[in-house]
View 1 (cartoon, rainbow, N blue to C red):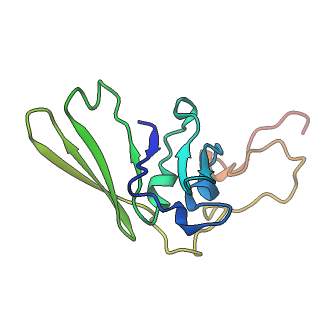
View 2: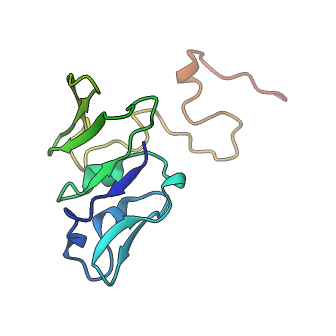
View 3: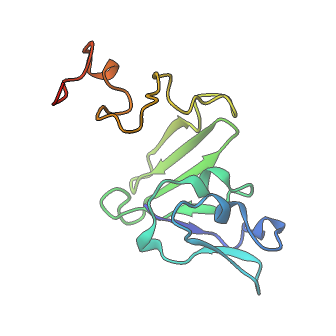
Length: 146
């Protein structure tokens, strides 16, 4: 479900050069139209569907376009962002409504451990992978030439 910007809600983050969705999009798809001062997704077919833009938009102007098999004719899927979660509201064609809440992050901002808590290998020439041997449950990883 690629994202798109609802121009009625978008205020361009009151930015002069870069919006929040431009800043966070990993595929550089979000663009600020300098004439209207509104953001837009320049190529929805290239959208990675990570929804970072949905999560960061302060005016909740970034919405998602549902696929016909997931959100068939007459249905809708709407994200609602809060400080710690996104509430997805799915409205089915028959009028039924389902809501799903997912956390935006599971650790407080600035406290994420980059290596995930695994001991880091110091030797970059080592043939073992990042978390080995601990992640494979072995005392050491088999290597050739020992």
